[in-house]
Length: 241
Image 1 (tube, rainbow, N blue to C red):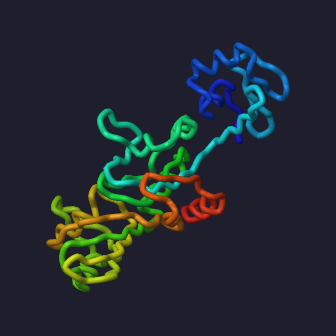
Image 2: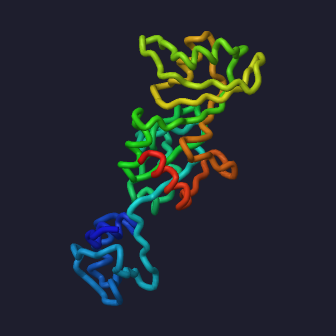
Image 3: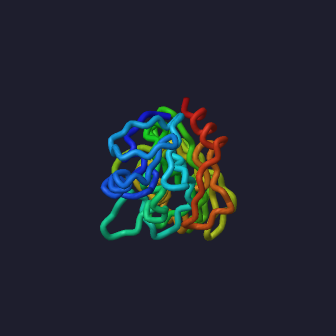
């Protein structure tokens, strides 16, 4: 953990805005190690100091890791003046920690979204050098063939001239509306939709089901979320070491 200003810690713990917590401190409501304090700039050590607001212990989290089953119709952003964002689906005690989505899912795409305030882990998970595989389930209008799978393996040239990195296309069911899994190590804008468009096909439904070792919890309905377990966090950290 780390040393941090008392007012900043309280604000990050969802107690209130920095202005609001300063007022609480000055009223003597906050205690540190059993003693009432009124110094808003007091430095506390999160590894050993016990902080209470009345009878409620303040448990400060330096980092937070959230798995969300992103619903359709919500954008992957921290803020938007017009659209509802994934951050809007979280409670104030979580948003106070300033989390952000790791990567993006299109507005009409569902599925696994990692939300955290751990910038270092997020950067590594998104770095092409780490080659973290993202797995998607998709329904495709049109018969998906082994020729399409080979095209994915070789890389597909998109309409802007960009050639994608090799990817894996697993055909679950080939029909008028085919079902497939796609495995990518990159995440360009609308990439899966553009890859299939280059093959003359349309993506009717898209859902991310895994990101590296992190697998979408089947108990989470669209729009629901939970914190990652310690084992899940450690597994992600090891993945990008």
